[in-house]
Image 1 (tube, helix red, strand yellow):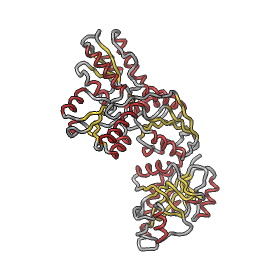
Image 2: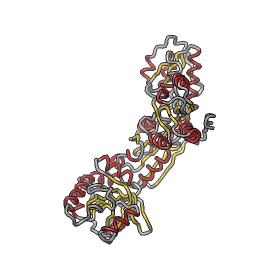
Image 3: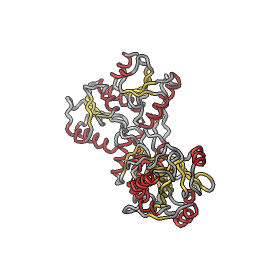
Image 4: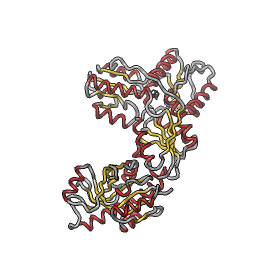
Amino acid sequence: MTGVVCAPLRLEAAALRVPGARVLHTGMGPRRSAEAAARLGDTPAVLAGVAGAVTDRVRPGDLVVATEIDGPDGPVSPPSAPLLAAALRRHGLTVHTGPIACSETLVEGAERVRLAERGALAVDMESAGFATVPGPLAVVRSVVDTPGHPLWRPGTVWRGIAGLRSLRAAAPVLADWCAAAAHGEILLASPRSFCAGVDRAIEIVERALARYGAPVYVRRQIVHNAHVVRRLETLGAVFVKEVEEVPAGATTVLAAHGVAPSVRKAAADRGVHLIDATCPLVTKVHNEVRRYSARGDTVFLIGHADHEEVEGTLGEAPDQVVVVEDAAAAAQVRPPDPEKVAYAMQTTLAVDEAEEIAAVLRKRFPAMSAPRRDDICYATTNRQRAVRVVAEHADLVLVVGSGNSSNSKRLVEVARRQGAPAHLIDDVSEVDLRWLAGASRVGITAGASAPPHLVDELTRCLAGLGRTALRESQVADEDVQFTLPREVD
Ligand code: SF4
């Protein structure tokens, strides 16, 4: 099922014709568009053409992607709009998203004002005819006239050319949308998204803001997710790199990844009011490293040297901790006394890779002490198990998470090792439509720091591209909860 680009005017159809695109000239006006829509059945359709803006915020040559169109029983929302708008922006076009109204006649003057007051950005004469199509639908309009530059005024021809030029520039992206639209299903990995440590860290900042007032300083990203950080910033959190940037006496939260003892000392020296949001499962690893190093062991810390959690754990005993990043490093590491060694792990590693490294160390150092239970946390383990199940059956896996989130990156790797193409996306705006061509079963998961609402938005968008069936693979129940520090309890 390949989608089709529907253009009301011949000129528009000509502008939209690019190799690989199926373009239909559907005719002008509501009656013709309704007839064309009826003939389409459930074929995915993107209605595209020129239109008038009802606000001067939208300029000639800008595109409007409809988040809402007029339907017979009220507004209808094409769900893939955020995804399409982002793809058009990446293509270098100026794109607005919002409602597109539909009128049976050309709209001028007071009527434009009325539609703008209703919240519309643009008005056309065909979108309502498509509102009830059963298949995936998108509506894109390229603006020719605006309230300040109405039709039938000098310059209309040039504005018309600008509008058609933008349509032509948009054509390859609309062809991608058509290729991406397909009936299929979403395979949802479970558990996914927030873990107990992330939930707790975010709640600590929110409660600190409520109890002590803004600003509350946070050393480093509270959790590795850009959306979480931005939301907390709007509430009054101020993110800093080091405690030295915090005014003396100010309330400061330490991020979930943990810190070296030197950071606590620096905070104490500045008289900072410290609240610790370190995940208790990271604290457990710090405690192990302290115990091993106190008895004189060299501690192999399996993890990524540049990750904040590893930086913090290493800081417990910098002279005795050796970071081991991979099996090759494990095969070469030379401790001063091979009889006095131990290992610990970063909590967010790929379980199988970490185990491979630990196996090399165990073989080389039979006397090596090990943590009673492996340090990779329950949330990391469960999310990796779940994505493995999903990736087995998926044509494509999308992992929601930020680029600096270790556990999210590991989910991508696990899915790829399972044979599925996989991509990390911060949110739906990073989905490349071309990934979806031919992918009827799309697996979705999210790293432990990614908010659940981003998964909901992605699921909605993909449903708007035809993946309307939803299958959830649940590999574990999670009911872990951590207590809050007394400063905010
Ligand atoms: Fe804690 Fe694991 Fe969540 Fe990290 S991923 S915050 S270690 S529960």
